[in-house]
Each structure stands twice: as C-alpha cells, then as structure tokens.
Amino acid sequence: MSVSVTKLDNGLNVVTESMPHLESAAMGVWVKAGSRDENQNQHGIAHLLEHMAFKGTANRTARQIAEQIENVGGDVNAATSVETTAYYARVLGEDVPLAADILYDILANSTFDDEELVREKHVILQEIGASQDMPDDLVMDMFQKSAFGDQALGRSILGTPKTVEQFEPDDIKTYLDSHYHGPNMVLAAAGSVDHDALVRQAEETFANFQSELPEPAKTAEYVGGEEIIERDFMEAQMILGFEGRAYHVRDFYASQLLASILGGGMSSRLFQEVREKRGLCYSVYAFHWGFSDTGVFGIHAATGADDLQELLPVILDELKRAGDNITQEELDRARAQVRAGLMMSMESPTARAGQIARQLLLFGREIPNEELMERLNALSTERIRDLAGRMFSENAATLTAIGPVKNMARLSETGLNLGLKPANAAE
Image 1: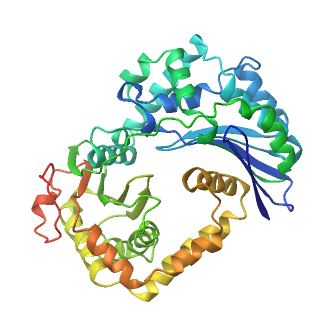
Image 2: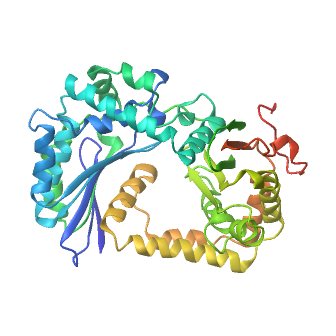
C-alpha cells in the first residue's frame, strides 16, 4: 500500500492510498470548515449545508443522486463536525469516476431549492428534537457550552430551532462560497483507486474551486464552568472535564494516552475503581478531543441517582492519583491500544481515506503510522504523570450533569485539593 498526493493549482489536495487486494474504494471530500467556522447568526448552517448538498443540483435531482450511486451498489453520505465537514462514498473500484463526479456536483452545483430547504429544515428540527430526548447527547452539548461559553466552539453542531428556521438559500450559498476553497479541501480515496486517473478528473472539476485561503476561524478560549440540570430521566449523565491540548502542541499524544489509561477500556483505572470495585455506575470512560488551537479532556459517567453523591469525589481522587503514580504496564497497554487501532484502520478503506484526509488538512502532510508510534514510544511514565498533575490542577474544571441530579456533589463541595474552581470562579 502506498500514499500518493497531488496538489492542484488551486491548492486542493488529491490523495489516494492504493489497496490492490480490494475490489472496492472509499472516497470523499473533506473540508476544513465546521461548526466553529459559523458566526453567531449562522449557528447550525454548516450542518444544514451538509444536508442540502444532496437535495438537488443543476444536473441531478435529489432522487437521481440517490439512484445513480445505488444503481452501482454504492452509498453516499456526509457528516459535520466541529472543524471539518466530510462528504463520502463507497463504491466498487470501477465506479470511482461516478462517485467523484457526484461529490463534485453536490458541492459545486447544488441549487438549494426553496421547497427542498423547507423540507430539510423540518428534518433537522426533528433531529434537534430527538437529541433533546437523549441524555448523553444533551450532557455533551452542555459540556461544550460550559467549557467554551458563548463561542462557536461552545455551540451545538445542529443549531437551534430558531436559527435553523431563519436560513434562506442565499445564506447557505454564502457560507459555502466563504469556506469551501481549494486550500481548505482534500479529495481522498483508498482501496481500488487509480491516483493519476482521479487527479485528471479533479483537474477538470475540483480545480474550479477558489484558490484563496478562507478566513480562519476565531481563536477559541477554554473557560470552564458548571451546569447541573435536574430532569425526569431514569439515569443521570455527567461529564467532568478540563482544558485539553491542541493537535499541534507537545502534550497532545500524551493526553491521548492519559485518556486511555484513565478510562479507555475495561482495564482502565476508572472502570476498575468506579464500576468494578465500587459499583457506582454502569458506564464510565475518558476522552480527549484536540482542536486546532485548544482541546478538552473529559470523563463521562452514567449512573443512578443514589450513587451520585459518592461518584464525583471518587473520580476526582483517581485523577489526583494519576498525577502521583502511573505504571509502565499501564503506559504499555495504552500504547498497544493505540497501535492496534492504527493497524486495524489500515484494513479499512473508509478509515484510511478519512485518516489521511484529516492529516493533510490539519498537518499539511500524511503522517505514517511508524512516525506516530515513534512519538508515542518516546513518552515516559514521568511525562504522563507530569501532564496529569498539571492538567487536573492548573485549569478551571468543567462539570455538567443532567437527570436525577438533586443529590450530586458540586465542584465547590468536593473538599479535594485539586485546584478545581467552582462555576464562574475568577481566574
């Protein structure tokens, strides 16, 4: 398997990884523009654009888009995240040109028909409504809002009923024209794909996107805070978090390993202490999300009302212990989990296309797995302990919870000397 990259004159990268043993290919267009690139009056428009891209172009109706890709046994979809939006397809190798043409068509020639927009806004309003019935989604939105306040990074990807209802076709086109530029885009494919043929096709189509670099998103600032909402749910959902590390900073990979050690599986510290030993919850895990200029480190737990009072102090105690003692065995296990994930992704064309596309958008180049493992192997237990000590003591905490949370301990009530600040505490 080999990765080939060609940059078009307008700055758009075409990247492929040939997997000769496969008969199919995964491909897509990844755009370095997501919910954090929205102005306040655009809240939810990145996600709405992703939906509307499939609702008809100057060359195809919405039905024709679906039928043409499914007539060859393929499928097409899209996803919006905080910093990127992806439009992707899975087809047999012989149908890569068709998939590439459809992806270009929906991004360059969408009509944003008024009637289709009315219908799709209604679909998204249903999606927003459904998320309100999902406690784990709600608590995550609350967490982002508390961690980043009234910044784009703190707003939900879906938008609100009020913001979504107000959008007109011209609003969507303005957002697309402002952010979907060549230097901000990657056309990626993995599997049964001919790099040179895809480049030739891209030169006739994707080269039409603007060559100017779009205006960058505003720099985000982690602030921290606390929001506890009592709701008549069967279970309580909580997230405790801290400022994480951006993709490009020294401690990014150490943060990934720390999250794995604390809550990355059944052998992790939190799972063993909180669930297996004490039985305080049925679900607990840790995560670290890196963004281009900041990040968040969080611990999510779901439990019943009776165990909430004890749950937060126990989690905090585990975080304190991480700054004092992390074993070589734990570090080796976390590295093995990352390595296995990397190796398994090499077997999936969908995973590989997305991986190399995001690497080009974020780092400007493909990063070989060997290089990633070298960075991880260079990390010591002392380095991870030092990071834990600083991460959990030097920054304001973020705590969000929803459900039967009347008896839940607040940050200001824990009594633990971890430097954690109560909600809205002064810096």
